[in-house]
Length: 163
Image 1 (cartoon, one colour):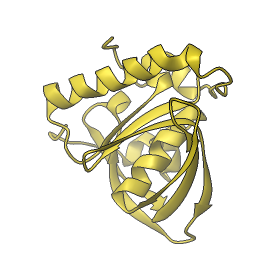
Image 2 (tube, rainbow, N blue to C red; image 1 turned 180 degrees about the vertical axis):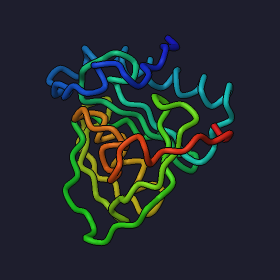
Image 3 (cartoon, rainbow, N blue to C red; image 1 turned 30 degrees about the horizontal axis):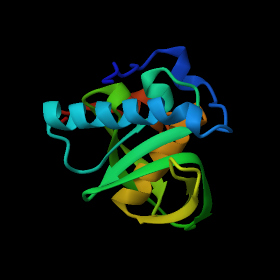
Image 4 (cartoon, one colour; image 1 turned 60 degrees about the vertical axis):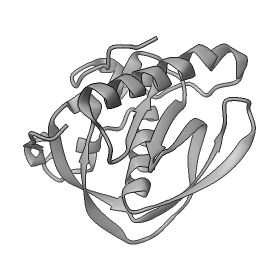
C-alpha cells in the first residue's frame, strides 16, 4: 500500500527502530516501502537513487529499501561493518525534508551487512553516491537525520527546485 511519508518535525523520525526478529511479520512493511518508492519515482521522477526507511512511513522497525542504478535492495537489520576513513561532502536530500538539500560529509565507501526479506544475510558495498544513500538510510533507523551531520543543522540546508 502506498503510504504518506512522515515529514520533518515528527517525533517518529527521531526514534531508534526495533530489530526485526520475525521475518514473516514484516513482509507488509517491505511491500509498503517498495510501493511507496515506486509511487514517488512515478510522481516526482526520482532517478539519482532513492531510499525509504520504515520510520518514514510510521513503522519503528529496522527496515529500509534502497534503489540505485536500477537495483533494489531490501535492508533488514542493516549495519555498517566497514567504512573508509575519508569523507567527502555530497549533495543530499531527504523525502522527509522535501525539496531541501545540503552538502553532507559522508564516508566515501561503506560495506553493509543486512538481511533480505527471506532472512538471508548478505553484504553490500557502496561508493560515492551509493555509499551516501546507504548511510542516509541506516541513519534513519537510529533516529538520525542528515541535518545532524551539518555544522549548523537546518541553517546549512538550501531550497532546491529539484525533487
